[in-house]
Amino acid sequence: MTAYLWLALLSAGTIGLLWLMRLRGPLLTLAAAAVAFGCAGYALQGSPGLPEASRAAGERTPPISLTMARRMLMGQFDNADNWLTISEALASRGNSQDAANILRSAVREHPGDFKLWVGLGNALADHAHGLSPAARFAFGRAQQLAPGHPAPAFFLGLAAARSGNPEEAVALWQGILARAPANASWRPLVEDAVLAMAGVNPPR
Image (tube, rainbow, N blue to C red; front, side):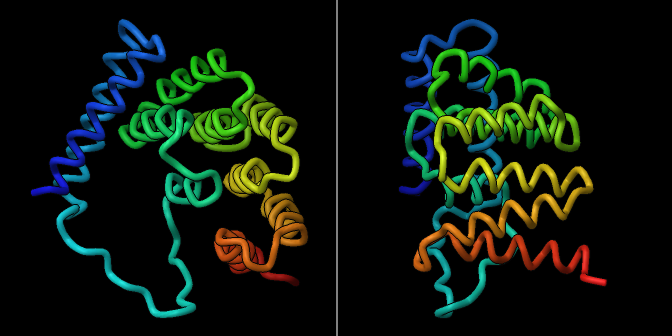
């Protein structure tokens, strides 16, 4: 029961933060609905009261959601995470246009936040079902704001793969790995992405 209480407090805190960020009118209503939907889905399916299952040492992470990949690479519990969580909740309901629109508002409010630009790129790619010019621009802006950070290149590669261009995806991910510290916590995520693409497009 404690887990549900924390979930309710987190939802209320997120909506309060959006109010402080001057989100008003229909956008605030839409955002609140997205938060409520996400919490309801988690409460019904996520079993928040159960302890987390332990993993065997060295066990590979299975295919994970876009949200989990984003948090592994860019963290969470910050201003960008609140916007991105709402956008992803809308996208999960099939509202890809609204998911992109809320992040357009976010980057207007915070144009220097590379995480929001990455999220906008993801949302635009999802709406277009591939790497559109607008999505590529958003990822490029994120790379300009955070040169050397793995997230813009990783998600640009993911969008490229969805567009039927696995070669670009693998090149981007191999570039990340070439620059990454050997002990980077997110390194297995990128390595698994490369292996997945090798399975889709095996060498001739």
